[in-house]
Figure 1 (cartoon, rainbow, N blue to C red):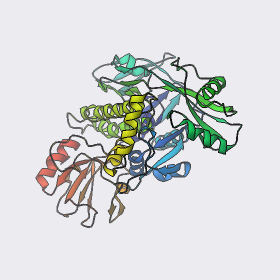
Figure 2: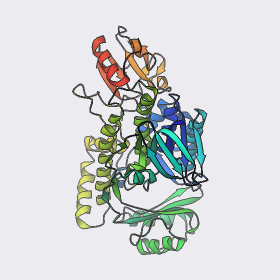
Figure 3: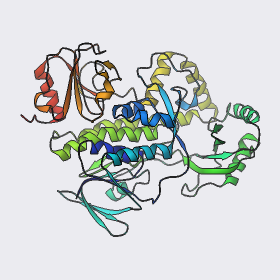
Figure 4: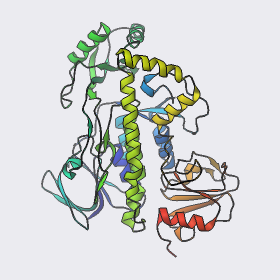
Amino acid sequence: MFDVIIAGCGPTGLMLAAELRLHDVRVLVLEKDTEPVSFVRIVGLHIRSLELMAMRGLLDRILPHGRQRPAGGFFAAINKPVPEGQDSAYAYLLGIPQPVIVNLLEDHAIELGAQVRRGCAVAGFEQDDDGVTVELADGERLRSRYLVGCDGGRSTVRKLLGVGFPGEPSRTETLMGEMEVGVPQEEIAAKVSEVRETHQRFWLRPVGVGYSVVVPAAGVSNRAEPPTLEDFKQQLRTIAGTDFGVHSPRWMSRFGDATRLAERYRVGRVLLAGDAAHIHPPIGGQGLNLGVQDAFNLGWKLAAQIRGWAPATLLDTYQAERHPVAEDVLDNTRAQMELLSTEPGPQAVRRLLTKLMDFDEVNHYLIEKITATGIRYDFGEGPDLLGRRLRDIDVKQGNLYGLLHRGRGLLLDRTERLTVGGWSDRVDYLADPTAALDVPCVLLRPDGHVAWIGDEQQDLDDHLSRWFGKPTN
């Protein structure tokens, strides 16, 4: 019997598996496809995801495989410089091939002891008071204490669970692929610059020996059917007046602007994360990041439930915290898609917002939305830092995130007077009066969010109980 079965071997499922394994939870990841995705789609890791990777010691493994670019110009593709004073040691976007990040996360999860089985599709499940029985497509039945659906926007787990997925269907569709071209780069750059004055959903960008091609589709079709090279040529000619001699595609796909959010993230012993819980247009490159951040929020809480020390309501905070975050992402992608419209009204709003973004406060606010650095969970009244993530600061042992690799809580004590006492099996302690903080002490959750600020032991003990359960002695 497993502790957790995860359906879906994408970044969300693999990150969740690794987080659970940090706490010795027995994990099985099931993937319906027999082989990993082979096409080389470039995805972006935003600031908050880079911070999370650094917290687990993964960033140094990932960086050599990606390309860094400034952390700006994301919102509705409005090209504005990055404002000064980004509150992070990782203030950049890392572009990385999707198969590479999946392989790295899979290696990480397996090194920690997770099992991964490919060619295993979930066909059904039943849950009871003690666990979940999962039935595979070949009839095999597996038993687990919990099941988590990380199986994408068409999630089988979500559908079998009967959770509503309200929202809007696709109204527009875009073709995306990587292929070679037959005209000089200078000609492409000039034409792209001309077309993008009116069509923001269009670009050709060099990637390796070819180009990334994005072009509006003629209508909305069955996304299960991949587009053809002729589809690309026809739409390029319609939008740009030339097909740029595109040939030899490496991969081709289509995406719509469907926007949906699961009504619930948990029903009993079955939970949802990543695209199984929310889908939205890829504008701003937030999808993968949102899913990985779901996994970081859920992992330690589900592990605490399984290990037996979770406070009664801890697992419920997963939906309470992450559902509003997804709502906000869905709203900002809706807004961005409107700003990409070629209609006069949206174009007027775009011109106005473009001018407003010359104010650093506006630009900074929108960057925080895209990069997830502005999230503040509701932990009750307190200083502005309460509920927010703490940036990677200097401490006497090097850097703060280097102390979070094990996925445990951390008390950072500048007074040198406090203690974690009976929670030392779940929470680490660092006394450092030199730490670069402007508050006396902070209690960090395993996901790096500030759970408490203060300098009184009794108040600290109350918050340790709130987040980490009863002390062991």
